[in-house]
Amino acid sequence: MFLPLSLLAALSLVLLLCVGALLWARWPRKKKPVPLPAEWALTPRPVFNSDERRVYRLLREALPHHIVLSKLPLVRFCQPLDAQQVRYWYDLLGTAHVTFAVCSANGKVLAAIDLDNERGASRRTLQIKQAVMGACGVRYMRCPLEQLPSVAELQMLVPQAAAPARGPQPAPVMSHASHQLSHTVAERRRARTALWQDSGFFQDSFFASDPRLESRLSEFGTLGSASSRAGAPSTLPPEEGGGMVIDTPGYASHAGSSVTRH
Image (cartoon, rainbow, N blue to C red):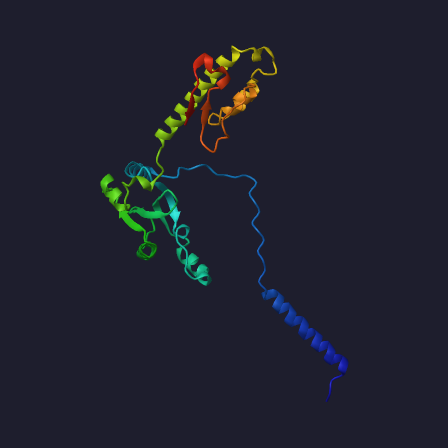
């Protein structure tokens, strides 16, 4: 017995609708983001507890030319060799961190230190940290709070901790030399201005020095341009580099002629 064609079409349509409804129900839906709170019931907290603050001060005393970071995740200083395994390694290492990381001036992690009082530090976590440090060439130390390392031991932990090239060094000599050069140039400018003011050129305001222009002159620039503005041409060739202080030949009779190179 054959069913009418219209009935078969209706049954097929109902079946398709059922399958579509089933697929729609099982289709993964994007979760709506949780709405932001109307009131942020938060309060600040210190980054260090009392024990961590003590260890941090000890590290700063032992390694003054290094950068000390706190609570640094492992994924911040290591990366997988295979880009296809990023998700695997992130899931494995994403929650692990070290209490302190000692870095060089350019941000490379040289050593990592953990405190033994960390809660939830399982044997698996310790094994993961040791394996990561070994693969990345980072020295690793776990220290109990009742027996903290000395300054000498911390310096031995970081390779060549005493080398001056490990961190940025102050440059007091350069600063002193710059200050001395600036003072010398200013003294010569004042002396030259006094000589020029004895001349009749400064009776005309056109040749008078403009304080606004004087304030824009560089302390390390050539003073030859200042003499050209005063109306005395310079017979020396243009400078090729370095500062040059020139006493104007036209007024050498007042204080003698001299050429000084710096």
